[in-house]
Image (cartoon, rainbow, N blue to C red; front, side, top):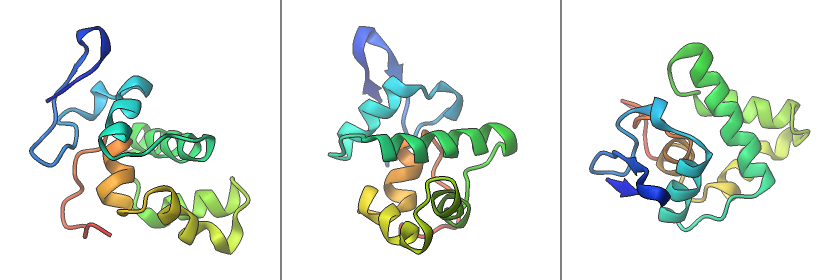
Length: 112
């Protein structure tokens, strides 16, 4: 469990992923990012909001390739998107981006 401000409690599993992705909000993202030693920038927020929108539409975490395509096209990063994703989340898409976006740990995905 992670305690948030004003006694807002987020239930996480043993690896720090939210048990209920619907309990996520921006305050939760800040708390989860802090647990990963990440200070969220505008670029982080763009990626996280895309991931949450994808989750709301499909009820599953976006595969990294969809997030990279979003970064290439919507954020204008082109071919630099993949490397920049790992600059934003240095321990990997699943290990950090999915966790901070409030996803359950995707089954069968590597931690990279």
